[in-house]
Image (tube, rainbow, N blue to C red; front, side, top):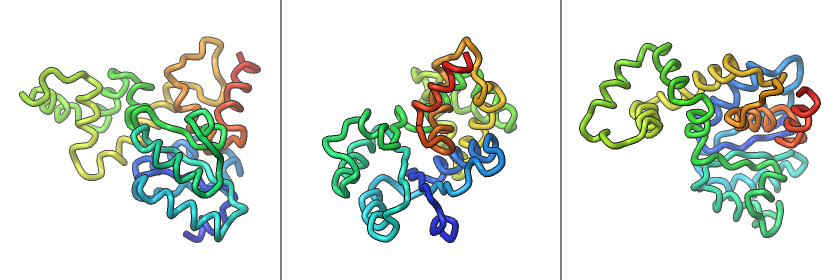
Length: 217
């Protein structure tokens, strides 16, 4: 909380695994003071966003607020932003212009789709848990589900595993793709990893990333 009191920018996320993912990327890709003054805060669920915004607008109105939420919680974030006067008649594009980005369907889903099923399975194997995944996939209740659904179920089945894999999947993205120097053959699959980087390090948001992409290509 001491760091938050000194922060110039606060990035709001719903849960601890979201916080772990963004902090991992910030720590891995930040150089020097690139991330100085930025604090990532987990508010314990979208139900707390209204109270959080009211408190920060009242006590630290100079702080820049940005955020990340699940698609299901988008209406809660949108209404809370409008109630405290941060935007009016907001849609998703309007929220993004304010620095509040929506994960489809959630951060975990974005990371899985960015790496692909095989990429996520390699991460699980590196964590020594591939056989546990295979046992889950063999259960009768899992028949008929997609590979992505299996992965989401696996990551959510044990306490602490979501945070564990939030960190591991982000590190895998950093290792797999050159995030700061984009190749000419830019792949849309890594768009979300760039979005997270933009939230943490670039005041221009995702638009700043794409502007750099065109200069680097």
